[in-house]
Length: 480
Image (cartoon, rainbow, N blue to C red):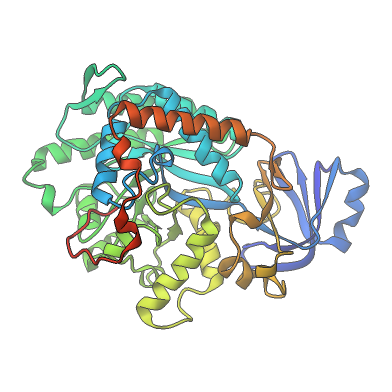
């Protein structure tokens, strides 16, 4: 018996032949797609289906995948009002002290709610970030995020690992008591979380490893022997557990260095990757590592990720939001449109990075980058039932005669009508079926204000006069 039958949708399958099926039906049994095709051919299933969803006027997409984001940032996203240095400093203060498990749980639910309403069914989220501050001083923070993920019904691959040398790192609790945390302790916590939560396809909660990016500028601060020791330890744990490895902030020779250190392989997902050298690109080709492109990030303003060139050379490039942060959220529709304009402006060519490839970067290419291409990323029989229904009955999506073009250029998160993950309806008619929006927003607001006040950062909540006036800042900014 079919559990759910979606009828009369326009299906952008992103399958091997990139079928666009008008008046399509999609059958779901358990957590899998059991049939997809013309509604006329599957209409008989309606008689024995537990639930029938009439999707007239809607486009069915594979669940969108965000390959790079940050846990914690959701509650500090606008702090500093555009002052990137101040925002980085706030992240460092809050993530290494001044926040407890309740803060991280509230932030997780808030970010997951935003994703749920945006059609993002799977994401990679670093447990912290900013200046490479990861909450791996204690497993309780990762446990809280994984519990929130399971509550939401979505999928999160939580990236955990050591922070940036030198060690030990100093963490503070709400009372100001300091704890010294070693590199070895952070790896122990990471291994613990991986062993207990690495089931992203079934429970929704998965865990992978993150290691800071090191480059030429770090060689004086971090001796080569110490860097090799840390790299070997992270690589050994990754090989032992078989998980994904991700890194945040590659640029200008750092990929080649990571390759020389023995860190890369087809299991690696490298974010940003701007201003790459030829050696960097060769390292990607040789190792099969994938790139998470974040076109809306400040780092993509300060440098350029050569996405079309990488794709031409066979590198798998996925799309990421790099959210939440001072100027961006989790709406992958906006990031798809941004990606197209970003690279078309560079080449002064409106045909660069066509809509279909852009959608692939947020679906099937992203799934492949995560090593999950056989399970998610497209609407195909036998794959997980991760499906988004987008309501095309909107002025900005009319006429609905070119759905691929409309979805990638004009759609936004507010157009998502329903979301199914693992065969379970988690958003129905734009109403969350798992998270209570009012409760989530109240708790997130309370925790954010408490943390900011406790840390003495209330002065960063104001919107200064400079936000109204154009003033070109010629000083180099630290990339986000």
